[in-house]
Image (tube, rainbow, N blue to C red):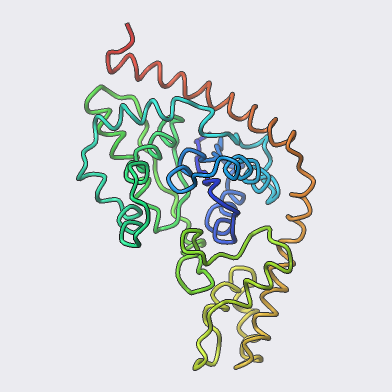
Length: 311
């Protein structure tokens, strides 16, 4: 079977953008591959500096993975920091890539333009991500169109290493998730924790209600575009359009319908999530990280031999 790889940062509570952009597409395809699902805790350090919060978030992300329906017996769920080869390989790749090469990264330029902390971890993010992908001889990486560059970086870095030291890394392909697209936030921009415009995936009904009611609407329009663009993720547009036509100009009614449909989708997952204990999470991460480490350590033995440090 081909290998599929993806992951999420434990930098805060997951939101519906994470669900439709990563988790649901993964859920729909992962059984067709030998799948790896990573908790990207070292990536989270670029923005999160609270150790207590990070520790909680790591467990919460695993709960989220399982709650949406991912079977840890059918996918390798592991913790990035438990596989030290990720950071070792990052240094080796850093000695191959150039500063101008990394300055082209869209994600870095976007965050820098918004005045966010431009630490070296954020700048070097594409290299660590390339290591995440390449260590496992990944064939495909499911991404939205806006994240395609991450896989392109991994492919180019693999080629640089292979050209310098001989064939070692498989060059991965992106699996563009057209159905995911860019999930809009409550302000109409891309839903992102860094924008503060998210709807929590596993929030209480009260939290979801409060957030949905804060979605920006155009008082001059006949239909609340931002509400509709989020709503169509939960309900087929052929069913949704007549409802919005019937509630023309009634923005609160449209928001009430959205709240109802989010709750219908999320409630069963929220209940399943509540039943997952810390012991369950620790067992999943221990077993998954051991498997990932076995694969990564074998790859690094080959890498060390190729670059000349293995005596």
